[in-house]
Amino acid sequence: DTAVSQTPKYLVTQMGNDKSIKCEQNLGHDTMYWYKQDSKKFLKIMFSYNNKELIINETVPNRFSPKSPDKAHLNLHINSLELGDSAVYFCASSGFSPGELFFGEGSRLTVL
Amino acid sequence: GENVEQHPSTLSVQEGDSAVIKCTYSDSASNYFPWYKQELGKRPQLIIDIRSNVGEKKDQRIAVTLNKTAKHFSLHITETQPEDSAVYFCALSGGSGGYNKLIFGAGTRLAVHP
Image (cartoon, rainbow over all chains, first blue to last red):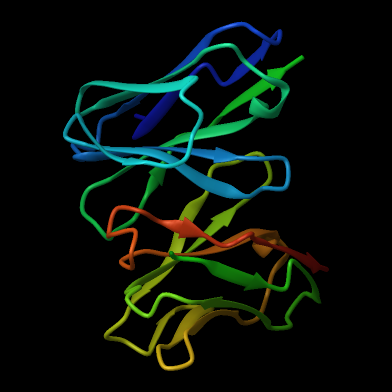
């Protein structure tokens, strides 16, 4: 019974396309996140939502648009994909702040 | 803003030796300091954390120490085993970015050789 699940696990697409990654958590947490991990393994926060409200929006291009239909879901839509968007995108949730982040398995995006 | 520097970037030890990874930070308001382990192809997972009102915390073979005055914290792994091989990330929150914003170090790739 996976705590934080994200789909798809792998995406391979062409430059200029649009893609979405979905995330769901069944931990009852109020806060969810998107992190980007580049090829050098650097983990950088992109967005955070608390109970469907956006609370953190790092300097991310506006081609990236998160959506939280309810507090258990946080999806990420990316428009006009670029080569530099290739990375592993991790969804995470936490029950209280500051506290443990529970990460999903990651979605590896490859832009050709 | 918050920033955390992590050293070394790679660490190679013999099985049974100790490993130490150190992180330094600039924002004195930071008050939560977790460590995450990421095995190859897997997700990061919390292994230990410490809050600013504590100087040291231990859990079996791993320990974390915090020096708030010098603004650094360290992860200590004793009696290393091959399964400790992974990338380790320090992180922090509670400073100017607030409690929800966890900032990660660049990671240390630990290799434990049998």
